[in-house]
Length: 470
Image 1 (cartoon, rainbow, N blue to C red):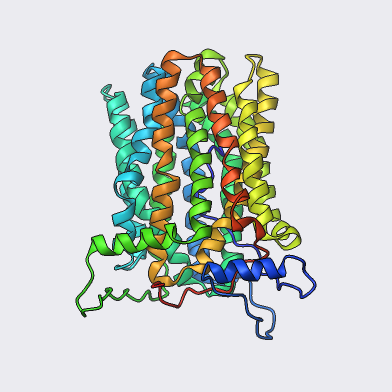
Image 2: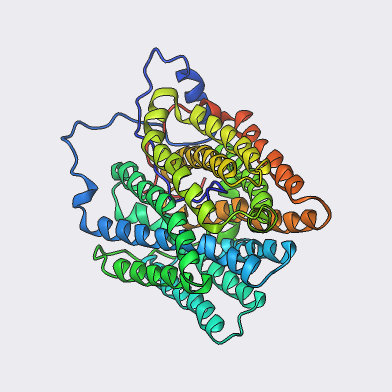
């Protein structure tokens, strides 16, 4: 389910020179100077670059991501189904699943980003995959022994969420180390296509597995995918230099608290980044509120089957694939800023289709397909452009803290949305709760609409090698 934006494995659009006759050129130049962003410069003449399909280390990362994402789509359906149907949890208890999984992004994202700017990222990626595999395997083990409870699902969700904090921040910061600046567009685009393929095939596979075997045993597939991902990442051979410790003005090494503060100042002090963070965080708040009670609403109240919902989301995820292919061409044609604004505008209203689902299986399936097409397409196009913009303007020595700060803000709203969804669903009809979440998500575009983001014509020339101090 493409419930949230800002998942952050996204592709930058191809760079486009601003033409002298472009009416946005002067506004773009003024905004970029005001924000102290690196200006685009002419690309040196060069021949056609080799495809990343021939880059052995990148292909290991791409294969690891593809396998892991496919497995995670199965758990995305299986674990809420275990809570709602197998364990017969209440709406509030089901909503808390999302809360405990995302809570580590509030508690640990900022220190994780500062710490990851001090260490090599590849070992962190491997450890994160292996740890999540072990956590997931405890679910079928406990079910087989007859001792599985909702509290264990909470524990697994929290541990997996904690490991995901470190994995995702390291993952976003590792790709700019592995690839040259001019290869980031292609590299992120290919990762997005694999994510799209996983969203197309994964939900249907997950729903089918639940129909064939007990839902707790379907989680084994996700655990195996994490093991395969960690093994592939361990085969990457490009040396990764160890980051240098930061030094203060007095010559002493800076502390973790000071480096966290620098990351916060970098994001909140940048007019582009803080407005993107506000937009993404608002969208995720509303989406999480709606989807926190989705299992109870769809599988219990409406009586729809996991196979139907899984198939609907698989078919509807064609929107994700379309977004992966069209995000860069759209940005080249109409500009990065307008694409960011337009895509986040579409994402929220698509949730309205979820709010008005009927109990008739055929009609509900068609509406789920339509909702997923709109949400998947808009979320991917939005993330392709805003994440790539962030990567391009952020120096390497600030990548970890920038990504962690953004995750702290944009994913930190998700547990708040889940708790709010559980509370509202305890007093209001489930359909009304979903509708409230859709209304919140629909307002997310206002952040970027009233900001200089809307005037961006292209992604600036990379500043990754520079210093983060401004």
